[in-house]
Length: 372
Image 1 (tube, rainbow, N blue to C red):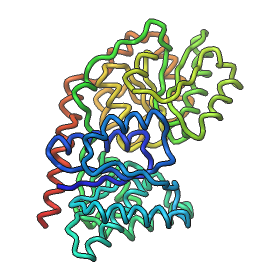
Image 2 (cartoon, rainbow, N blue to C red):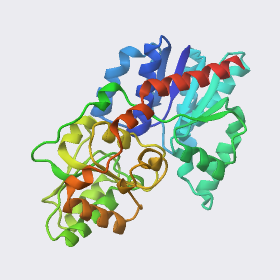
Image 3 (tube, one colour):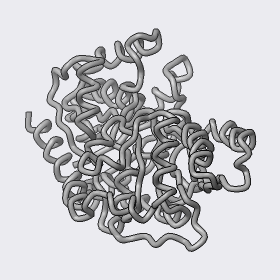
């Protein structure tokens, strides 16, 4: 098959998902290509592209894509359509809100010219983070309803994402399924922590949705509970990062809370003892899977699809607010060795969240749509 993945931002979980899926599809003999934004990401993301470029027979195509829908979409949309039409895919798989709109509208346009292309959509949170009660949310969710008839199948990454779609948009009228994210064999190798590692570690995008601000404030409150200083490392980049640096300074934590630019996640794991995922909303975050696969202790908020991963280890889950985070962080700091014993079974995580199983399940969805 000729498979094209279209998404906006080549950072975070979506990018990890597409890289793993594209690599597995290429290994299975398919011709794969990627279309995404050129204005997001930096040297680290360029390095990640270099790692998969030789696997992408249909190439990497990067053009400017703005985050929100507006007049600035006209030229990028036209250019994206021209690229897709030239590639002539059998499969057009859109990831996230922008990729989902582009893949379904442009795939339908190709079908108008008798092209044989199946159109797929994976939300990865995206539009589903919006509220039905706000004007912007109403507009975004209405657009989702409008383009759903142009969809051959929706592939959700968690049951929570599927249920959110049903609650905010309606039960899909097209075929849909849940296929969890998966990890490769190397992800399941243990990562040793540096001798001078910080007490806690955050790895992810620097934006409020992911909760770095809650972690910083919770760390300050936890110090008051335990009566001594606690350290943390925050790895990542994003528009809100300067505000978080300022917050650390305002709270007097600058000597023990440090920031690092994006780096390979397994390198980042060496920098802290316990990984904290303080998100306000999620679909099925890779960082939780990657942490468990590397046998690192984790503390995560009970949002989105995270309980689908950590449900068998309830002690690792906490409500998404500063007070709850602070209390649990203080408990962990009091006896980190005891907390490390509360993690889910490593073999069970490997069985449930393997990349090959993910890719095979996605291919089955593709072939079913093509046959019909």
